Length: 415
Image 1 (spheres, one colour):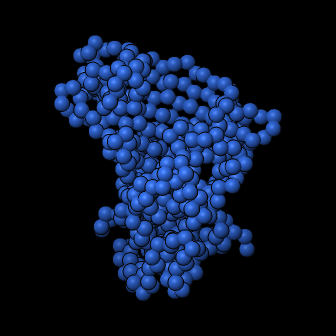
Image 2 (cartoon, helix red, strand yellow):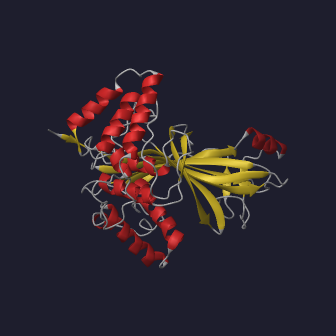
Image 3 (cartoon, rainbow, N blue to C red):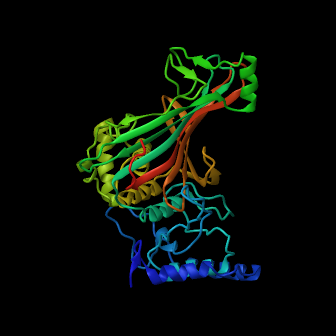
């Protein structure tokens, strides 16, 4: 008996067979829900697992309850096949798995699966809804990403970045975008490469366009030295409406990101291989790195830094699927994230949204992470904060990074 993503193949085939059946009647749905609740009430729920602590015998964790299910899928960028998320449980044995399978058999084929209750401090789903909460989404993403390819000739990342900024006169909002692709390799005879293009800028909404026309329809905007409250724009920057020419060349800084903890330094391939992929050991490793870099944070400050660093691992570092899955599991253990349901990201793709808040430059900023539950990979990271136009109207400024491609490939750079 072979295994797929750590689950016996015959068990997965059984779940797929269940999902292929036509939807049951409303009476069957109600009866199945009653049986599920009766089964679940008879089994105690374990508290969240902590490093070095295992649940007591006879209890079940939220992960044990996720034996089968379906998520609203999205189209794969390379085609039109809709993928289902991988099971996140530990097999179909036991009461919890039997209850989950009973639910799968009684729910209509297009109904979302309501998973185990939240146990980790992340904000729960709205009472009475079938929408999964933040912990459940993150644990499902951990399971799904574990099945991604573990190696290739290049680590490729293609992103679209964007900003919403106030015009220098604060009369309207400008949206601008750029694209960038990097190909990183550790193989001899190959070279890291990059390519990118500035995609242009213009009024963000029809209301902003009207204010822009009233201002003379400028094609460039020169910013002052003080850009406080204008959004993420460099002091004295010149922002142009026209797109730039495509550019490319050798890439010499690896995955460096001055805003990161792990990515702030020019970490080498060998150092990446020493990062533990066990969630408990990874958390201890990250806490030590954060404390060494920024001081011994406590409470929510450390939790915020852990979240930020886990997102670095998931979206920016060429690491193993197991390490990305461990980062997702740490995120699932942290409080402060709220599931917002299915949304559309800045590139028009659908995914599951998780929101949280951070303090940035002394101001409270809203963040949103959009995840593709089919693959467990991030679609976009977005930030927004309040701003005020010259006429006193409230508006929003912010930025986003949308991931068009992320992962290992054997394809050669096209540039």
